[in-house]
Image 1 (spheres, rainbow, N blue to C red):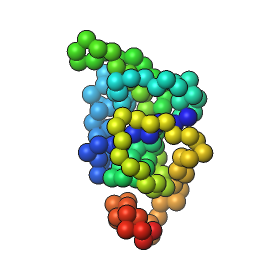
Image 2: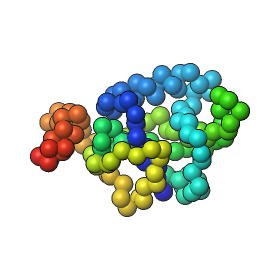
Image 3: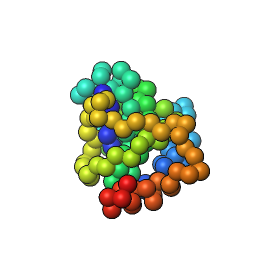
Image 4: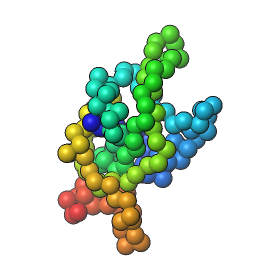
Length: 138
């Protein structure tokens, strides 16, 4: 089972990678964590090979393996959840998604395929491909 999450304020994969690199440097143990209010109810399924798929500018564009789910203290007295992510960001085929709050589950059969090894100079830049898809031209 996978999770689907909007990458708010992120314009492309390079921005996502840069933000996460900065976050990782602030962690004493060097782990990359994404904080959320509630842990997934289907945590066992998510930890069994699941990834977080990032929606960037209306399209699923990348994924990262979820390595662990930890309990974390909030800024106030509340408890939070930390998804420990593999720092490697894997580009995926673009798949349109509507905005939503929080995260959603994503069935493995409906997850977009990885683009690993298919990046070439002839491939359109992500932002251009997304605009062409919005217009129905790709």
